[in-house]
Length: 242
Image (cartoon, rainbow, N blue to C red; front, top):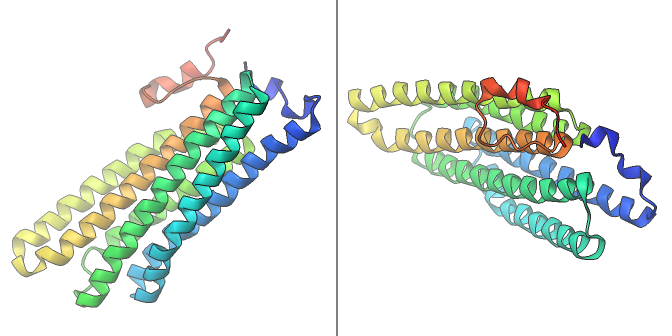
């Protein structure tokens, strides 16, 4: 059943409505923090701000705490309310989304730690152009994924699923370029490896943003598209469901 025809506000229990709304609100708050973590981690590298990088590392605990709180709230809703249909999908989607947001936070922390190492080594800025380009792309994907979840916007979610391949292509191109630099100058191997780890973390963030978009489709349409080829998604979206 499409969630758009099964509105949560029609519950008899006003408290149940409030609990469901709080789950979404807390997930969006976690998403906002994670989005800032990614932005600050990249800024720490590009601006050579090791103090900012350390704050990102320190703030990772706050991201973890938010996931634990959301998981506890979801568990309580499942135990007390025994939700069904779209309400159950909402709770499950929130649990899955919180897990992916926590992993995005982990990747932001990895970026920050590598940024600190590069700053302390004063190793130049080779690869920073690639980091800037890919980071802008994946940060936009995370922001759009959160927007699609908040608005239950499957059209935007599907756009993100298709967009993930673009990030993969950008990542592959950047890695090939950096490999060429390493072969030309052995002294650049260590700093370029750190940049490669940063790019890998950014690519993983794009993957997690893609996951968030898939959960929106599951929440709204009741359709699990995790193992569906992007080219088949549009027609599958509108298959009749019982």
